[in-house]
Picture 1 (cartoon, one colour):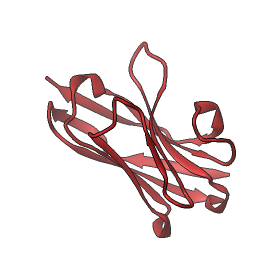
Picture 2 (tube, helix red, strand yellow; picture 1 turned 90 degrees about the vertical axis):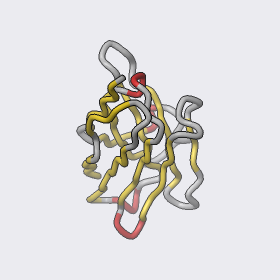
Picture 3 (cartoon, rainbow, N blue to C red; picture 1 turned 135 degrees about the horizontal axis):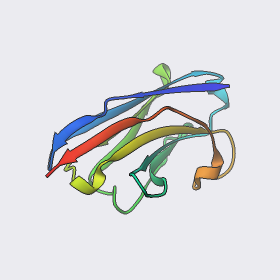
Picture 4 (cartoon, one colour; picture 1 turned 90 degrees about the horizontal axis):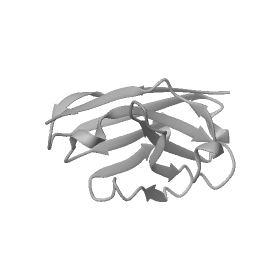
Length: 123
């Protein structure tokens, strides 16, 4: 079992920044990737970014490239998502998730999910 707790969400104005954190506990040695996802009301959950635990390779959705940065502190079992140049369309609940296997590309690859942290961007 892996437990995930997100924090760092809030309300910012357009152009503002936030730093989301996700702390993992439990069987963290089994984790392959940590992903960040978001879901706005009435929309499907979408991938924002993910990072491979070993090696640190990253992937970003096109909407995140150049504005968001995913990073990790393995010693503290923590993954971060830096959100810059935020837009109203970034408003959503943001979730972190841990994948134990697979390619980490699809939400189906992720076994454990946090409770989410709300990001609201005002215009």
